[in-house]
Length: 458
Image 1 (cartoon, rainbow, N blue to C red):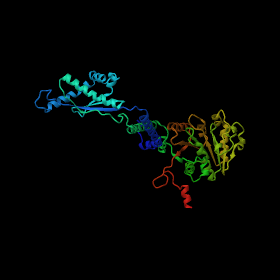
Image 2: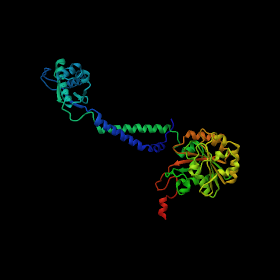
Image 3: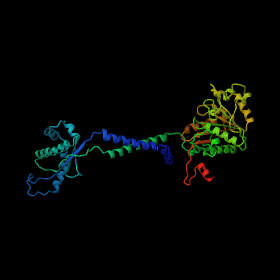
Image 4: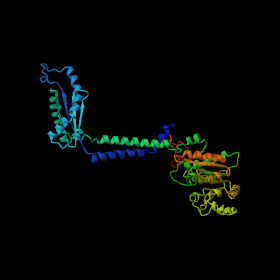
């Protein structure tokens, strides 16, 4: 069995805590409604009898009770219990009270117990009618006493407590039942969360990436609640923007001995955030004074034309089936200084063949000379050859993963696939990390000033 990291489980569990509490409340509410509106109330009434020796019956001058008498009566407790439940007693009770009950029906309402291993017998009758319950209990005591006298020729059954008419149902404990229902809901929901956690293969933290994937984390991109696509341009002071700039710096330092011109950004599965990272990394290089071209090489579902709000009617796919010497006609200058974009173009029937063509290789050689940095936004690696082809044509490859989204198995397979084609993988970008506030008020992963702090400093 795989070792469970309790801290990791608690972090995972907290995400579902609100739903667990809600389920507990629902369970308690359902139980309240059932107890108050659906459950049929039953009433229990009991009588107590004590087994004592009758001196006259036993022809004794001394009416005192000996230890032998006590022992004998205690031994008779189990026998008397069976007599009370016998057809002899039960059927006589039915006849004397003219009850519309069968033997089995009335027997199911009778419960006989000894009180703490004493000579006391507690005869409890449960019925939907409280008065009927008390009448039956008292009549059982009478009939039982008579039958014992007839069978054993002794009169050792005395009534200690007569049955009274109960005022409250014995089977309805609304508060107790609500608590039990809430606990059941809590245990079941917590158990489900644990099972899901145990079998969940998604990456839950960056430590797992570094330890199990054996690739360095070259950037940690924080989750941006604003959902702004071009966050580096529109919110340069945001934590996500700082993360992208760190990625740019780390890539530059990782290629000190080799010229860094072409960078492939890919991912293991869709929705990991590779297009977000690609677009903002391109902006970051452009802001650093580099002449940048961002090429949307995801010919299947590329969305760079939507991110930069440019026309996507023609782009890379159209260029690769025409004269690549006219590549300038397919490049769109953005509103951001030094940054140009080539959209994916129309959807082709053979994306892999186009990317593996001589035209594409020649085109990349041309733009490599024309631009300082060329960033390729590739398709996900899982199940596709597109990015594997491109990885052999660029200087370095970056894999974008999304915490709590990317399956660990898919990331491992993506790394193996890239290794098999000889790709130079710079490392992994851990996307969608939630910034954690530390006790001293800053961020655990990010050192900087918030917008409010900057405004206060002015």
